Length: 521
Image (cartoon, rainbow, N blue to C red; front, side, top):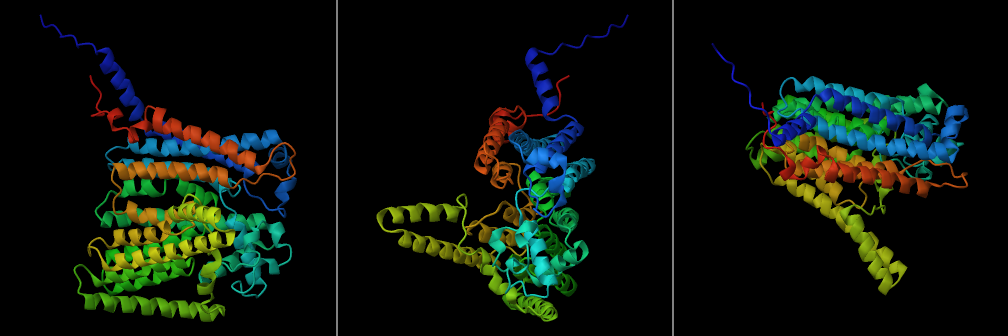
């Protein structure tokens, strides 16, 4: 008589490890659902502390009044915003844990997460920045037949009622001719309806996101890296969604068009790819001139692998001639010429404490002020700011000349990154110019991914606390109190993710990671 051998029972340690592995590497559906809930919480929170113009009729809606003009409603919205943002960060990381291996079946999960996490943000009030309102104001300047490089938005009646930051009252926009045309088109369509204008600008940003989502995987494949993982690194990132969709920054369109240029220049390293790549990057420059840093690398791709310096300088000449001709035509058609060059100084003199150069400026100028005078401190601060920018640009030029010819896309990202790092003013969306170039050329699952995760957490904490539209007419609550509350909640949540959470702490503590994610049976 055959007897079936009994399966040995699992030890308590094996059973506990199995439960742990099921938790860490389980079904992605739960992760997508939880991330979607976080996105919805952020959207609801935006109704209370997101940006809205005084001219918007939404100010008269009872729900908006209840959320924005009493302390309980504002506190609730800040909590929803902070918790929702941290939830999205957690589930973004959890998705990568559950899709280990990045096989062919992971693409649908990644796209599902992107769509589900992005969709609620389409209905949010602008968060994290009010630049989109300045786009509308500059469009009104264009529609009035004025030159925005010579006339600030204050030249138009009631500009402040439309939500533009007073910074832009007399300042020229640091944007290119193409985006000025887009701003004018939006205002022509929306008229005085600021809310419709915001929706249109967000749709334009979403178009840019679509370009990024399309070209990042394709370019990563050409570079020999997993396309789905690159898509997760860039487009599923909650900071990316927050700045390029919720805040509707025009950087999304600039980045998407530039990436398209690099794809075609990488795909066909010849005249065809070079001309298309140069033209697309020129269009990116005509949106935000910072893309000018990328133009020489199109020439390097056009030159081909192991090209001689004669050929490299020849392709640089071609790329420069193409770009100059196209920018000249746009300048003539608009009548603004190269006015955007002078407008690049709009952000001059600005700095922020967390940038390396900004921190140095604060420390050194404080010491100088203590031992000398405030005038001397301001002089030193400006000097450090100017020198740091030259260092960034000089370093970017060095990367143009130094490096392997089969690593040009990576070098483009490094060059752009150096300009950002050495800038005294680093906004969170500046990083999103750089990240796609690193993602499509490989971010390793080691300290590089750890640093990327921590950086995302930092900028999400800063984003949810930096710009809150809190009514100045409340007696018992103000903007600073709101920021403090947002920082406490989001920072506490981030500490939980890094040090306590059984899944996400594994990113930074290798000893917590299971050697194998196969279940013991």
